[in-house]
View 1: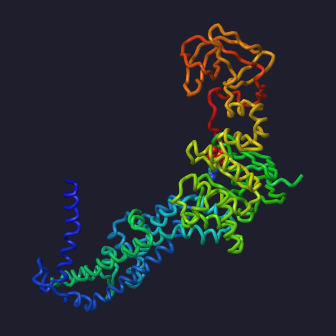
View 2 (view 1 turned 60 degrees about the horizontal axis):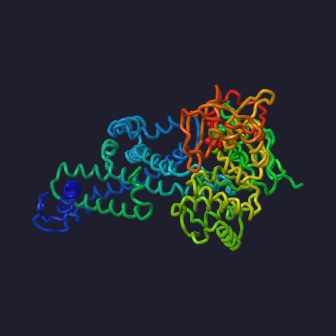
Length: 256
Length: 344
Ligand SMILES: Nc1ncnc2c1ncn2[C@@H]1O[C@H](COP(=O)(O)OP(=O)(O)OP(=O)(O)O)[C@@H](O)[C@H]1O
Ligand SMILES: [Mg+2]
């Protein structure tokens, strides 16, 4: 009974994905299932599609940049929140986590107003800032969790054994945090890369992210190109997940 | 006499207005095993952390090896600390954990290898050198923590309830282990504990703290046989507190109070009182008897398992074993509470 249920659940989860993959390899000219025959032509077409190429670069730039920025701000913030006792610590923590509660469209609209309309920042800049804000809660949460799980006496042990504050940070705090930082980086990168609501609002002439470009594409065409792009993204995501698994372990990434 | 390893002079620590450690004076001689003993919240950990340099004192002076060290950062104090949680570095193997302090001191690699080997041998863990801490049992982790602290040949070894995370049997076993390591290395040690047995068994000198103050110190036998105040007596398991006319306040251990069988002639000396059994607690080899005598409550240990609550009983108090008390503190404390939380 349970096996049957989990098989059903698996079918619901994997079914649509398998469908998309099957359609990507179709030789037909429209999205149809089962595909009339097999071919790789939609992959060729997808890879050659200029807007997708541009959007992929934008997406990768934004995801990498925003991830780096979010970690640059988030890791020290997590350190301060977890390791220091100061007035307003809770408030600071809440502030860093707040973007996770605000609906993304609201956040996107607010940022659009501020960054692009008022401050006249370019679309790429706005995307970078917007995504950084979006990713901050992940960076603070995931790295914070890895610190919270670690014994606060570790740093004292390091000091007691003769390491000054800097060496204690380098030899103890940082290695203890590393799995958390890697997890946060992967999660942040994927979150940014897959984001639609924010990217939808923060784009400009010739600058949009891959998911947004895919969305535009299906508005006008009904061929399997988007299925091919989706399949490529799927493969890339699985690869990233596997590598991360090897590096730090899956459960650490997804059980924040 | 050589300079004492640790000297605390009027060390005080306040936390937002409340005093956790109150003008403590303490001297620890070289090679000595000192135990800081006291109920929860009485400033034991705070004292130890100030000696280690993790916490600055609000006032007072700390001398280490005779030199002023009050403001010295921990990394410059040459102190070996064993934490209650062990605080082993999770990303390093056992041998790297033990080597850490030596690496930070710039000891040459070859010498590090020998010394780590020796110390692991000392705690019987040489075969687990390549394991990570999480692959060890609690007792093994405890030994690694000890080895890591000992490896740097510290001036003083600080132990904050090092055995409290072990189960009862292992705890007793590790006490001897700890003592052996301390004797073999000749290290000076300060142990924090709220387990009187641990302190009695390990320490050369026992320091009893109450609400941030030292209330009594001395060799365990002396302190145990002659607690100065009611607080110390209660903490060490004295349960009967009497105010005898002409003798002042005295205390007597329940083990020394005799439960007389019906018709039994009391041993010479002391007093016989009659009362009623209020409660009997079975403890295996014997029973703990609580009896009411007039408006007083007395405690005795007996091997007579036929005693039942509500029955009349005769108790023999051997006054030769009674300990006179200073009676300056604790009169407000209820006689039944052995381990009270200190008021914050
Ligand atoms: N960082 C701190 N901030 C505020 N108060 C503290 C701090 N550390 C300790 N205290 C207070 O100081 C007092 C002494 O604490 P300490 O930890 O030294 O007790 P202890 O004797 O080690 O107790 P235990 O046996 O429970 O470990 C307590 O009342 C405690 O609440
Ligand atoms: Mg403590």
